Image (cartoon, rainbow, N blue to C red; front, side):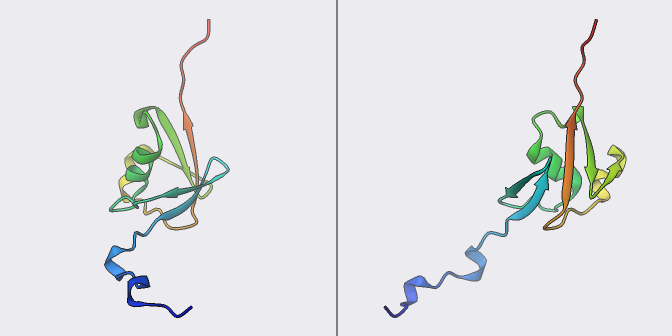
Length: 87
């Protein structure tokens, strides 16, 4: 069956999803945070971002550097939530 003009999607209508590995699982962030900094990505992924430690591509990222770290398609993140407790 031949394609018709209705099958064509304008480029500006396409969303660019960010494909990541987060805690060992493939995740898709759509839409991609703008800008795609570690700070913005963690805010999208974590319920309580103030209580997490983030590792980006095998390197623990100090919180004060998150806004300067660009997260790219295919990057690997480990996000660990800090929990209190004990006796």
